[in-house]
Image (tube, rainbow, N blue to C red; front, side, top):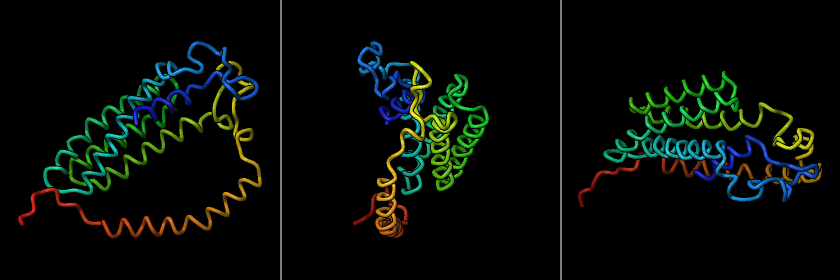
Length: 206
C-alpha cells in the first residue's frame, strides 16, 4: 500500500518523458532509479497510501466482526482518517488537488470517523471508499486530456488520445467484458451474500 501510494504520488507530479514517451537514460539522477520514490510527492503519496489502506481495513474489519476485534478496528478509523485528511490538505496546498475536492474529502473523512464512532461501519466504509476514489480520479482528471505530464516538455506529455489502445483491442476487450463480467458480478454477489453476517470474534464455548 505504501509503494502504491508513492507511485501515484510520482505519476501525479509527472515524469521526465522524452518525445518518444520514454524516460531517457540521461533524464536525471532520479529518472530511472528507485530514488524517484524519495521525491516529496512520492513520500506524501506513500503516507497517503498507508493511511488509506489502514482506513479501509479498519472500516471493513469493523463492519465484518464483533466484540473486541470490532472495537479495536473502530479505534483505528479516527487516526487513519486524520492522517489521510492531512495528506489531502497538503496535496491541496501544493496545487495537486483542487480546493473544492480538498474541502469535500476532508469533510467526508470527518463524517466517516464519526460514523465509525457511532457504530455505523457500513457508512464509514462507503465514505472511505468514496473519498479515495475521488482523490485518485481528481489527481488524473484535472489535467485532462493529459494523463501523464512530462517535466521536460509539456508537448511530450501522454494524452488520452496517445495512450488509448487500438480500435480492435478496445472492441475485443469490450466483448470479453460483456461475456465475463456478469459471471464475476454474480459470483462476487453470491460470496458476499453467503458471508453477509458478522464474524464472531469472541470465544465460542465448546
